[in-house]
Amino acid sequence: MAIFKNKLARRLAMGAALAVPVAMLAAPVLANHSWSTYHWARSSPELTVPVGDNVTSTWDPYLSQAVVDWNKSTVINSPLVPGSASAKRCGAVSGTIQVCNSAYGRTGWLGIASISLSGGHISQGTTKLNDTYFDTAQYNTPAWRAMVTCQEIGHDYGLNHQDEVFTNPNLNTCMDYTNDPTTNQHPNAHDYEQLGTIYNHLEAASAVSPRGNAAMGADSGDTPAEWGRAVHFDGNGRPDMFERIDGPGQKTMTHVFWAIGEGPRGRSF
Image (cartoon, one colour):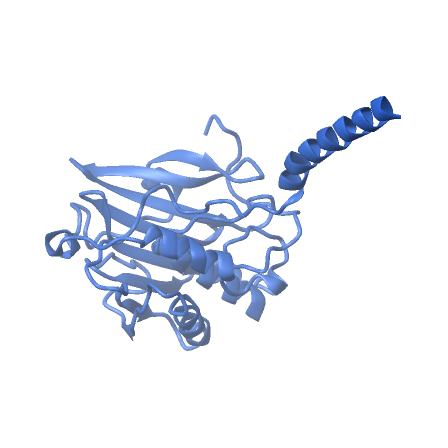
């Protein structure tokens, strides 16, 4: 009987030890979704980068909501201000995020977000929303307009996607690739948590002064040929992130949200 009890005790102990890693594997894990190390410099508790409104009245409600949504983060308090760029060109303005809409043509993309990097920090950002697609029945919906506006501005703050497989269940965040944005129109708690991680430090005042890069005022372009080299591909094999070198220590990064079934394919791109 004593031998039996000892064996039983050993088996129970082994089972308990194995249960720990199994439980750990079963627990949900929220992935890091920062956009590399890209972030704005700041010396105060909140980031107050102005968001320039260069959009038409059709887009105003979606832009306003996106700014309100991102300002719910504990580290962002961006004012919505009149735009400083032409809608078609959407030139970057140092120290700001400029948001524009226009009929940019059959480019394949719904929206693009570009950030200029200078001295290791974001110095300026732009978001473009393509009316060539949003004026069609497929994309002229509140859900599509809200999601793409929210996502592109999220990129301009330094966020990447939480998930990049379009057919996966929605994560209830605009930072999620999907073919049905019904429940993906706003940031979620993990987006705010990630922003807190990205902006968990203050910088010296000298680092905060915006310094536009050599391409300041130039638009990011509307085609892959203008965005530089592809450095990342989405879940459908399309290049969705590009890097363009603008000068010593200066470059422009562009995130692309392709329309369903459109965009170039192939990792040899």
